[in-house]
Length: 476
Image (cartoon, rainbow, N blue to C red):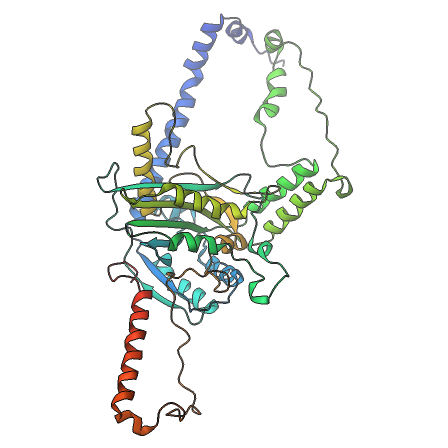
């Protein structure tokens, strides 16, 4: 028995005038596209609502980290700290995500300068506080960790404001995230004494923070979210692209549909003409001997980055100041100069996100758009929002330790960085009770000796008062 297919309705459909053809196509099939868009939108609204409800149950703690004076720990210690925090990463099931609203929580590593007094802080979920403290103490045993009030409390939430103005931006990677920035290992050299062989890039930022006057505040945060290892595949694809090898990173829908569309029937031939598959010229993959020095360097550093533990991270900066003392060129240019230390023109670098988040506008409706940007930026900072603003990039533990670490005393002489006193220990048993060449037991009752000792104590107290921040600072 022969099966006969009547193609007359299909033939009549394709012979309609173009405007009728499009209208009937939309009438028969367009509702599917609209329905699909509606379903996707409804699912996203559902997820956002569930995540908002779940986030209300999460409590955070803001920890001030004071390390001992005369710190000699290199950024390698901070790199180990980030490695330990990777233990916070966990798998979230389908039901936990869509019905409970759970998502991977992030940490915020911050540097804050208020009136010239600088403090290093870590904002962590309360459930991960022990993890953070263990990570810090494991690398800095003599550090002091104190929970403090949020320094952003009291900051204006909308602009314009009568008293304050702000400048700020998110800083993003110039190229694909698989290309690394210049890391701390490249700031070392073999000349001079051993204590000066590492030129700490943090020194310039500490000097900038210490130069702020009363009424000025500088906020710098790095939102760090533990993630899996899927990003490594994209790094491999980038290496294959440099070598000219074929990658399987994308799905070419048009290439897949092209032979199907042209192979339907004679009706399709009448519209599109006979189908002849296009032959794509295959690029010959390059060998390592054929690569240029720049290409070899890219491959080497991409593979090095892919071999390390990575986090999703976002950099955000806010300079908040009273209008009468505000100095945007000093702070803005100073921070851009600090962040440019990590440029490697063959690989990657940072740039301020001038298109979306930077407090700068051009062309139409400048004033209103600028105020909207300022309001959005400070609220995103205060909320430590990962989803707002530009998408997060991928940074390895080495890159994170480069852009956020405790300054090394030999390189940074900033006088107002909050640091813990030296190591606390008991006096050695062999220490004499009195120094024979200075005082004797009888001198305790000597009036002149007592006066000298009191003057020395008063001088010491005044020195300590100069180094301590005012009591009204949130981290005092």
